[in-house]
Length: 472
Image (cartoon, rainbow, N blue to C red):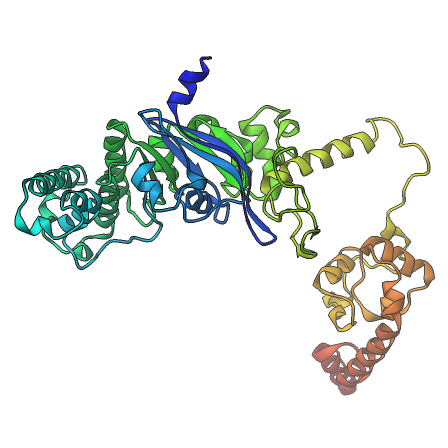
């Protein structure tokens, strides 16, 4: 492939971009390209770092590491990370919108589009009050600005509302006005941060039409969006982020069927990940997943809680900081973890028809001597009264035939060892004295039962039987 042709076709080249906030790495070793004239979508779950990438591109943040190169149509290149933020729209021709609408609500729709062209008008006025005297250069610039504003009002279907205050427009129309205002700056790269947020289906279709009109002018669009109907219909290229790192990159159809995207972005439950992988991908796709950034360029695993493999505790040698991170934060990482677990289970499981080597393991609960098939009288004791037994352990004990205080009170050493093996405890039953607690509770239960029943039967049924016996 011709390298010069590739560079000409690429308007934005992001290389090994990292953005750190103290010990937090919001973006870790991100690299992608946006082609000229294409709509490139940047998608991912909330908190994936998409807006942080936009802020680095448009100069609101200065990245910690990496290079952001913009190449204009005339061949001039700009390193955006080195430009002051006000020079990025003026010289590099990059415009953006924000998640929250930022219009001048008290100004008319037309005036909002004229404000976006203030640089041209100020230059025509000689950066003074000469425009007030009707100089021809200013008149010409003013007429051109009004013509351009009317052009984008037509594209945004807002001509009839040109003289209305911008704040009176419906939400969807305000979104389109904000995009039209950005286009009045004459950008070569338009960055849109969730333009379809809050739009109904009809407004989303109108937005799609406007973006396709913008694309037809040759303007490149970099789009952050959660509305998949918008992304899949109009995007030429999709980049997917999770926890500040790229997990997928390609055309919409490739991304749509990427198991990493399904697992991480679309919110598949952990136990469903493997099923989805089998349905949409090759059987061996799990083994081919890329779990983290290139270690030669990106941060080390101990340097970030947002990029690369995550661990329980990570230390930052430069600041002595310790950051605690929840295990399994990355859905994409869980895919490989499940694959490794399955592979390990396959190695250790015996072949059909063959007995495993060594002594056969006996179920731990088989050693509990006084199990019952069901609670006596159909009513179980409240084992939660024993300090140390929670709802989960109570359920496990019930599943293995332990329902009453007197059962636990009668446990011998072998019973305790069997119960601890099943509950995955290590000496906890003895430390918390379950047996002693159970003996006390069993005596209290027996005493209460004797009081209620008069020593004959249980509850009201026993009391009634005693009375009938007296009559005889």
